[in-house]
Image (tube, rainbow, N blue to C red; front, top):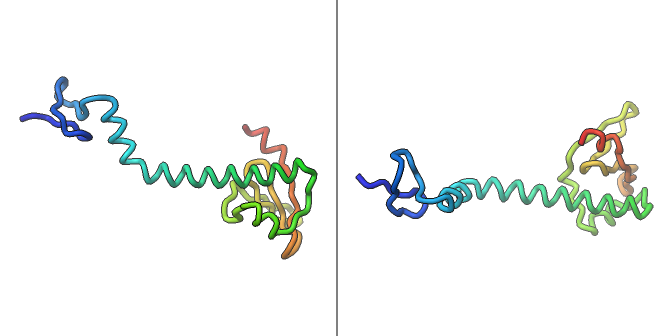
Length: 121
């Protein structure tokens, strides 16, 4: 019985437990299997990087308080962040890596930077 490559279907020569005719076919096969998962992770990571860049740029420009709509207009997605820190006073900070924000009221957001985050890296 001829063994065939799981990716391209060519005849396989060599070891009896071989599944692919080449490294390229093995890579193609595994990339096809993981495509959906990889795309999701890639998209989420892209959104996190964009959110971090927006917060970083604003913070480094000296902006510490910004209107919520202005942040949204810059493309910030409030659904994606890396972690939340709640203080003893009850303030909740949403962070995207080392840059974060706290909602001051319904309209304004206070930006912050957590330098302790950099110590963990």
